[in-house]
Amino acid sequence: MATVPTELANSLDAAGTRAKLDTAAKKLVKHRVILAEILKECTDEFKNFDLKYIQDNCFVGEVKMDIVSVDQDIPDADETDTSDADTSVVGSDTEDASIKEGTIRYDLIFDAVVPDTQKQIRMVINVEIQVSTDLPYSIVTRAIYYAARLVSRQKGTVFTNSDYQKIQKVYSIWICPDPKKMNANSIAEYGITQQKVIGRVKEKVENYDKIKIIILSVNDEGMENRNTIIRLLSTLLSTTESVENRKKILQNDFNISMTKEIEEEVAEMCNLGMAVELKGVEKGVAQGIKQGVEIKLIEDIKNLMDTLKLTAEQAMDALKVPKEDQEYYAKKL
Image (cartoon, rainbow, N blue to C red; front, side, top):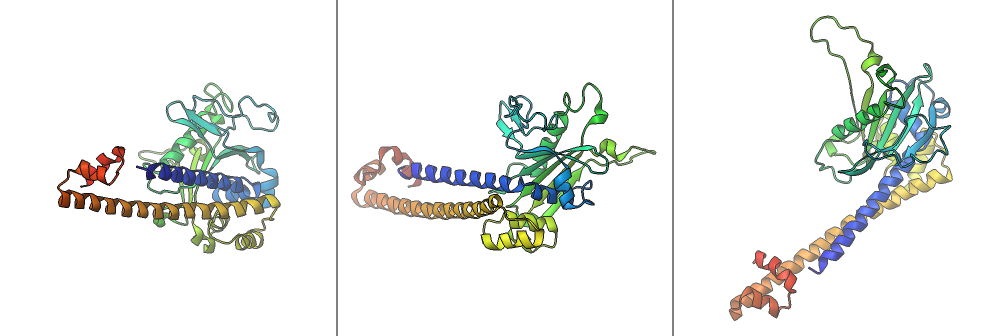
């Protein structure tokens, strides 16, 4: 049908806009001033430390975005780049890729050091813009896979042979700005715990507390939430609140300086959010027009068949329905 190419183009255009929105969100969260808030509010290891101290002293190397592979059979995007070898943490990568499912990259990944122990904690931060919440899997199951890969990929870099005691703890923190209504403005934590089934068991917590998964679900209503991290992320990633109001909240409530870079990224989030909504409206209007045209054409075909005793094919030929579309309309008669 003549409308198909246009619909496909609109869908691709909207998908491209959503992809840009996803990238804009990651760029905003990537700032250390934001990541320091996430570390303080979402992890046990950093909750008692000052934000400025975390920001200045607890990050090791760079924060990598869309570089490190999730799967094991394709190298990381920066594998051949050794320009920052002196500042990067051994084994800290951002992508996993599978030959069968294509390249999958961690959105953000960085290493952090616990201030009081100088023990490295590997962390991966994923920012997922879930336009549709009707997914064929739970975000938790995907997060488990991502976290498990961050543990397994430590062999050969963080530890060798059977020296499992050196495994570094992994946090996989997922930020969902468009959750299902029942999950909105919530924080859920998943991890490995010990349960004594029979007898007495004495095992140090640090020996099994190697994976933590945190799901942060926020929307614009979270801007009024009392929880610090929910309010911050809701404000930061809002696509409907005015740029000026968001800047005011970020400055006054969270003491985040509006650098030119952050200010531009906040504005970009707002503009892209409006574009996604507009594409949705345009798609709905186009779909409505298409349905109306189809209904009228089907009625015309039926009228010709009844009044002139024509076959469906003859009626469609008389109405100049393209041959490639006639089978489609024949099924609707």
